[in-house]
Image (cartoon, rainbow, N blue to C red; front, top):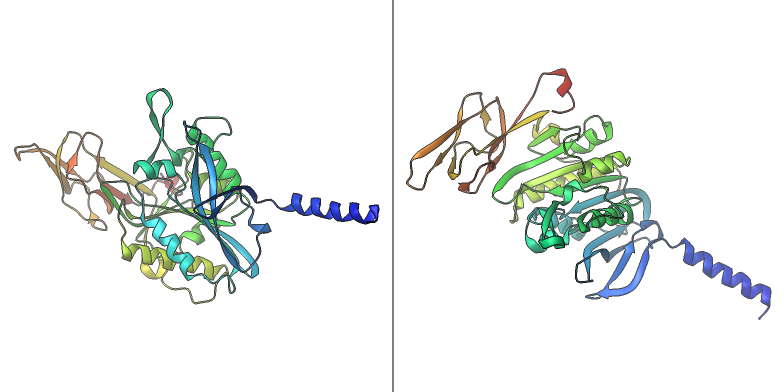
Length: 367
């Protein structure tokens, strides 16, 4: 072969290899290829992909893996990231993403949808909101306080770093982080959103949520929503009910909202359905949590969505003999956002959370 032709061909091969930014390590898990970095721009259009993303290593030298789905449309368009499983006892979001992908036709899709399931596999294994570390006898970290993570840190911080830099960044123009309340507590369909960012407000109000908390994110350093917002990726946190169970009505309404987002961004065809405006979503800027001051059996006297007034009795606690040992009243007027569903409550356990509109100008974008 002519030496010049050979070098030209070889150069072309090298260029092709370097240009491909999704990194495969050659492994497969249950037939699914393992990646250490995702770049949706180098995936062929008109297909749905499944990957296992290699996260941080365990103490025994094996790795944690995160299931990822990518729908790459035939036509160019927006990139939407759907993430769930940062907390291990929050399950509704996985069903939302599974159903969304079951409905997508990549041949008719404009743009790309990335679905990240089990973002914190360690937490799901332990069925807890925290990441369990084995170092020095073991301790826990809240994964949703670790972003954007650390390249050199503990396993929770390094896993967050890998997710943020090798999976999320570059693959999203918009993001929705799907959560629920924790075990033994419940939310309605509820959104945290930074209304200082017009794109975030628009994103939030495409969802027919029951309630929206206007939130500047200052109180939740390390939350994925806030880290992505700072990376110029408009993001909301969508809370879908309570932990550990599937709730079809809330799941379906979350799906309707996500479809609204895709329709609004011309990713799929259709008409926008119920939104925050047409659903009469309650939007407010402040919330107060009423927590148990003693240990005992709790009876919650209000329901999610109830309007309460200052001084209204909202919960009681009894001792093992049935005697009332503590009564709780609403410290503010507003709407019940969350309740404790577990009958036993120790000091600090959530009883009732109330969302309210605070007229103080400093609370315009959240208190």
